[in-house]
Image (cartoon, rainbow over all chains, first blue to last red):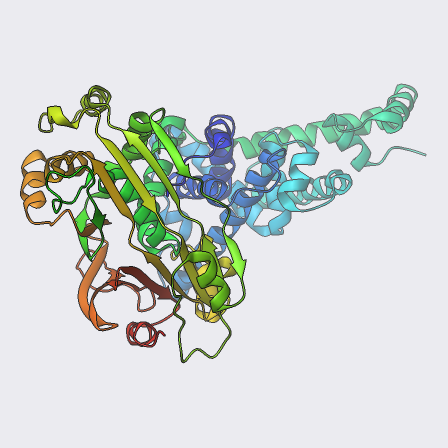
Length: 178
Length: 390
């Protein structure tokens, strides 16, 4: 009569909760949304777990990425609508940050702007790799072949770097690390 | 030939192995140009890493604790289960079995006052709206189920084993296996399929001390257990039941009404199921005070002592099947069906309004048989099915 919590769920939450949240936060930039989407990811694991729980990490990242992208697309549509309606931009509506982190916030804004100019897959690749996923985990998460990850990642980095330089030069500022 | 950026990038990520790794290391050791390129790729990668690090959560943006995650998921599951308890198709049978295990097991008839054998038979159904959260503990296990398991774990003797349900193809075959005349929907446009569940029977001797212990551990301040409860022999017989299905009911066992995909499937399925089952029987030897035991059972289910006492007085425990339903989530009305009065159940929102027009369950008792109908139907169609059985 009742469906009790499956044994692997608690372990999965212990092992992956923070990582999944962080990836979603990097993708969405919104703590509340990242929290919602991460919870939804684990809820799906409970309700409709994969037949093979051996590669749970890859499965969780894949679900999280799909949820994150859908959410981003919805935000993007909302943003376009608001732009069209003459409202404030999405960046301006983000949660205000303290003075001490204003500089970080500016770079964050720039990084997001550049990520938005990449293809969705490129943005995901960079975020997942930065989040410490192995090529195999990235391949599972994005439904691509593991042998293609290096090539796609390389291409994504080149594009990111070029666009970031363009953006910072446009803003009269050099990117960090140069 | 020089190493390309992809190889260098993969090498830096530690993702090269086997022959490719050996070749790359070997080449790098003797190629200044590739070493320089490697440095450039590394610098770029590190720069990007540092840019992306600005996306990392700040202190105020760090994730909630895993304990809180588990708690939220449990709560979500609980909320869902409260709905599923009612709307899952197998619910009727499960509710009957559960409620038998919970309270009816103790409910004797009063008819044969001083005899050694008492008899309980369902003649009517009543619904008991309540807060179902009391049924479930923090671990996700049903509190009540656990308590019952504790009480009976080593005192139950199964007298008739439950067998795997059997699928048969004709009414006669189903009736033959189940042992009662099976009714079908006369105006159905598709052929029915039949599943016969064997039911089961068991007996147990009441251990008053053990029950007292479990009640006390559950934190229930119930009435003192009657002295004469100790050693009472209880026989429970859950007869065979038949589920008659029309349309495609394959997915029905896992139906989740909150999932839009499931709801779309449901609408297309044309699934209608009719459950039929003779009244379960409970006999005790010697007679025990049913209402007092019911009060304990009701408190297990989350009622206060006063509420349980009050409610207990309103029910004829000798003949009534009491089905708990989640308060605020399930509405019901008395309907005229199959020549008797039945109960129509439906999900409601917080304002008590019907939430969906295709999630009804109809329950009634006629000639000693318990019936339930549900499916992808609106109210009138469901009643129409129930009124056209033969």
